[in-house]
Length: 135
Image 1 (cartoon, helix red, strand yellow):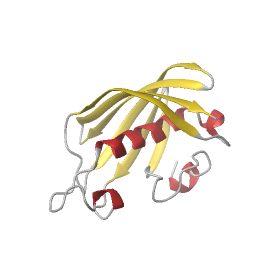
Image 2 (cartoon, one colour):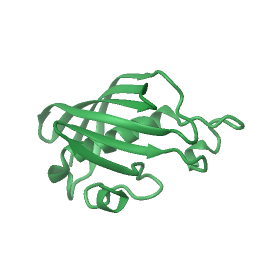
Image 3 (cartoon, one colour):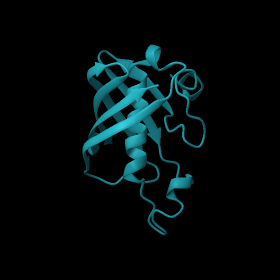
């Protein structure tokens, strides 16, 4: 799915639509975002050394998780209910493409539990367990 197709399932819009593309691959969703360098979240993080904030990486992970449940997500808003075991292993910099791999662990609608890992050039950058509600 490209950005326009993602708008059909995600309520997010620019500047908070943070996926360039995503697809479902078996039981997993894979989402990608390329850091251009002029994003609002890099403007002060950090002057002279822009680094993608961890909270933005987690938002990209959450948006990728929504691709797993595209039928359930349509017409609803997704709200975080928890972030656990978040780990940031390597920096994500301008020019990098962050590739998220997410899968559902369990669901008890309206609550869903997922895990994800993000990679840059095959190297782990971020991992976390997420929970969210569809309302």
